[in-house]
Length: 218
Image (cartoon, rainbow, N blue to C red; front, side, top):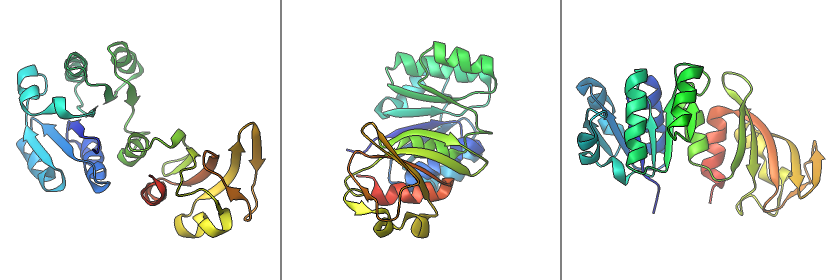
């Protein structure tokens, strides 16, 4: 059964996350108090509802408890903290929230938010890449649209050479190192065979990494 996601707050960041998750085939419950924002996103997600997320009863009635992960993307700091507290009380295991400042980040983490993002640095697609992949071990933003990724090789990648995988030609991805047990292969040759469980370090553009994931995730 696929994970279900909730997105609370449908500004640019929240809308981007909701739409990208649905594109990957994950059902999304999108929530906002603004009818116009809900109306604008409803055709792109599985469920969209006009809800005051600071009201626990209304949030529960909308079905938020069915979500495995909830992204809190509201702009108001007080509402963000209150909604995160409610989700924590609902026993939502994976709460992701955007923050407006370092202080806001510290408060969110104190109340149980698993991950805090700053939308200026974490585009929606980057957050989606991390949320939907068990294979991504680490993810570093190098520039506005280029990332360095540490990726655990899946069965779909295994037992093929880098030449056969043609990651650079197909996705614009450059493998710069492979970690195998305690050994690190720097600048691996095109003939290097990828084994299941290898940790690949590669650089690529954020949208291209999303396409790579869709191709090779289990």
